[in-house]
Length: 384
Ligand SMILES: Cc1cc2nc3c(=O)[nH]c(=O)nc-3n(C[C@H](O)[C@H](O)[C@H](O)COP(=O)(O)OP(=O)(O)OC[C@H]3O[C@@H](n4cnc5c(N)ncnc54)[C@H](O)[C@@H]3O)c2cc1C
Image 1 (cartoon, rainbow, N blue to C red):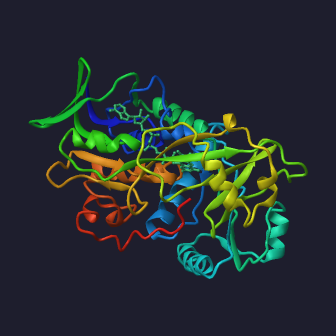
Image 2 (image 1 turned 120 degrees about the vertical axis):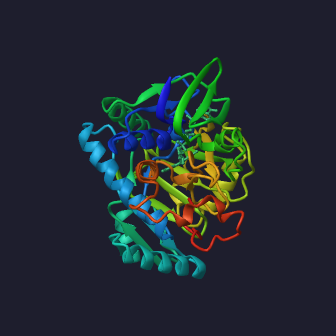
Image 3 (image 1 turned 90 degrees about the horizontal axis):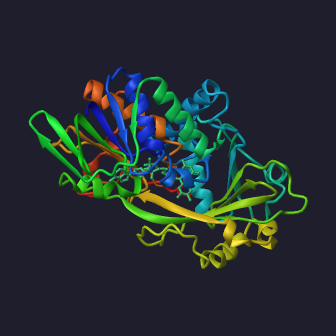
């Protein structure tokens, strides 16, 4: 089988890349995944948040583009994406958090993100589950919100299929090499030929890059999510509430809440089982702003974990090595791969069709930034 572009990975990133390639007019686009269906990697384990409230320009622009594109896809697929603009509320109690929030909001507003400052009184109205004790500042963006990760997968895949993307499941890529003008991609007994290969293998992207000798600094790190039993008198709707002092966030999930905290010290692992020890760590952090969830019962069987495809600066890599321009790396999206998926897709489609990306300045996402030790454009403080 031959393709203009072969995409490795049918998660949010690979599916969005394939869709955008077809939208840009690339004729033959094939997505290969080792799982029997799409979205069975990190994408299917995500929390489902989408937010433009980041600290760096590139992350904000990727979110703005993707949230808009997901909202449009939601309409086009009769609500399959499940976009609900419940807003994200960031709260700062310490001087360091308040300072970081001030700088982020200034950057967000300069790029047109409709973020508003909230008084403690407004915070209590928006999110009655929150304690505003010691609150210094709070910022809210109403167009941030949540999507359904499985719905996004289904919508991207259905739209791609409608436009002629080929999907090949149950096939593991085991080798990639260049032969003349084409790349040969080995999947067991089958060999695919393609002019371009896109590495969208999520937490396994380093492994896939290494098949062609490319060193891609993306590492899998476990991220746990906790779901509580019912919380009496919880308001039916609250925003995604982020306590910047402790890094904990909560949102409504059924009759309880979902709690997440991204431990910066979590080791590199492929283990996706829920870590019971995490519960004590989270409890210690809930005290600060979320007393009602702290008092709720938790059944660990209802909690889950997945892998963040992480980079050292919490920014993705979208680039091709200079000696292998046909092998585009599109990975390392950490905890924001779904909310950056369609922007990443657009960027890769432009690299393929025009040789450079005009919709975004991809300099912050270049591969060489790690080897060059130049992370000046990618200092992200809003890591959740
Ligand atoms: C607990 C948790 C909460 C999260 N919350 C959010 C959130 O709220 N919002 C958000 O935007 N993001 C969130 N994320 C992050 C998001 O899930 C990821 O950034 C995103 O799913 C990455 O997409 P991907 O396509 O790169 O990777 P994946 O979804 O992992 O897809 C990669 C695919 O590549 C395939 N693959 C790998 N190696 C091979 C091979 N050799 N051959 C064939 N196929 C291969 C895999 O089977 C997999 O299907 C969360 C993640 C976790 C774990």
